[in-house]
Length: 394
Ligand code: NDP
Ligand code: GDR
Image (tube, rainbow, N blue to C red; front, side):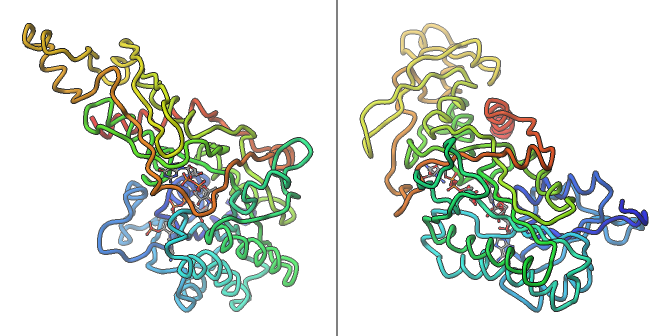
């Protein structure tokens, strides 16, 4: 609620995505009326927010969805005019870095010009004094250039940008146009420069979710092998639930400013693989190198495996299987899994034409100025994602 005790009104683009869904929950908890823009699709795209749906025929509706698209200015202007939001969170984007190499022009239209369309709509409607705008900027702006880290070895609010993908290049326009509208028109428009954040709701083609889904499916005998790209890429991974809190805090400040949101820790993709598989008791051994590298099941902690899956792990063997029908059933349930099985293979299809090798952010400004503190560490994130995916596959 604000001073006049009228509930605040927020508009979220990208409400059907990972962050949009957590942010909508957070704002509803805080008493906001939440409006969201969803795209018309031939199949359902609202799974992450279905639990928030309200029948518009009910009396006290505080969650409303509008059909729209960031490529359509007239639609954006009309929705903002109708909603008269106190806060806009522009989270809508084609957010997959690898896919941005396949559809660069579309990415520019949505991720770059889309941000402009939001800001221009606020200006055209003369809402500059009323409406605050959050722009979803990203650590991809830094491009992982080692020479651009600060003296302590982190990327912070003052580090230079060097984007390495059509996605990063589009997002750099979004960053600067937000800053320019702040300076040119005195708008309360801010960038959150968020490092990677994940959750059980993460899209299934991003690397962390791909790994946790595969670890769960392989442990349950529903998948044989996981194909990955660059195992040595390093990312600063946090939990999306923590990061949407920072988005809100950024718009509650007295002055509009930009903030880095990160954990300050970086981890290799291959180590995230180890952590996810360790949740089901598996140890992975790496063999080979480059495109020929594989991950092999070296050992299984049977107790951990049982706690995570509810199944007993037994080394597969034809003698055992013929002697004992119970074991035969268990072996059947866990498919072809065995000590020595190749569980991970590198597939160069997933390599990127230009890669961001390492990202690590310095969240000091957010911690001191916003009072932001994440609740999850990486281990907590992995556990949350593994629990979700084991549940899903069971
Ligand atoms: P998701 O990919 O999960 O969600 C993207 C959202 O944007 C979806 O709701 C999607 O709709 C919507 N969208 C895509 N294209 C359009 C369009 N043309 N018009 C309107 N909406 C569109 O991303 P996240 O939730 O992970 O990220 C949210 C934002 O934060 C994005 O802008 C992303 O680039 C940025 N970001 C994300 C980080 C992360 O680690 N997650 C880190 C830093 C920045 P649909 O469901 O129909 O596809
Ligand atoms: P990223 O996330 O590109 O950092 O962008 P992603 O999870 O796609 O990749 C992270 C790193 O893992 C390597 N990798 C793979 N990536 C994918 N997707 N699939 C694979 O099989 C695979 N194998 C290795 C990648 O090469 C990369 O180095 C995310 C998105 O949410 C952006 O929208 C956001 O802006 C940034 O995070 C911060």
